[in-house]
Length: 369
Figure 1 (cartoon, rainbow, N blue to C red):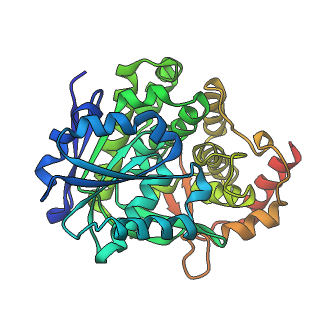
Figure 2 (figure 1 turned 60 degrees about the vertical axis):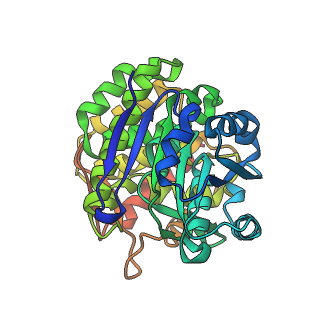
């Protein structure tokens, strides 16, 4: 398939997301128009570096590259590694007019973007997402940041990339669990605003997961298209962009409860969170009984986590999970905001949700463990 381009329309800060196979091999030509001098600084992680750093260096051609590989995993997204990254960029004499490249998944993209946002009060950066989750979600939209012991993504900034290069070929190197975790974010797009896309995923999801490159490119393109349109209308999440958080209020609480570790990957938490959001919606009489059942059926057909019972190890009780949700950055005036749904493809922002219903859904899920 040819390279596809999605524009993120933000006036003077507009940029393109380019999607297709082989982009890493031609990265030098892709980013050359952005460079003031032939030099880039790359932030990546050790796993991605072993797989793709040599290919990036080769693809850059005559452009000089310096790189720092951080430890892999969500635990990297905190003050110690963030500080290390910023100090390294300063030691490498990265100037305000230079380019930082984020080569990796969501953790590296968020951390590198935040480092670029604060370095010399803001330098430009390019996202080269290597995971499905990063290609369809975290690399687009300019949300950057790190985690705190108080919660996920509570420290950060809106800092838009100058370019996103989503090389579909890189997805072939992902372990199956990581690919399916990213698929949790793909499903989210269908659930929040495109019922026909969800229908398409039900029909094509298994072949997509098995490696069909054309299906993978379509799924990434449609997801990015939806996110770009929402971000263009609501960059800093004053309204509509909040819909992109479908499943995330539950997810972030579960990630906090599991220590941001390998027990629960972010995309797995999103999938479980989406199922819980539809369950709460159904209990509140907002959608049919069929909707949450259909969500869970598709996730199970893909071999994904769907319920609290699928998370290994201990979890807090329902009140403990609600307390963790209260730290979510979407809390306004001390009140939790949920993204609920009137049906598949019909998500909306809900204030004043009966927490008794949420507590009941969580307690029921925990009893199933």
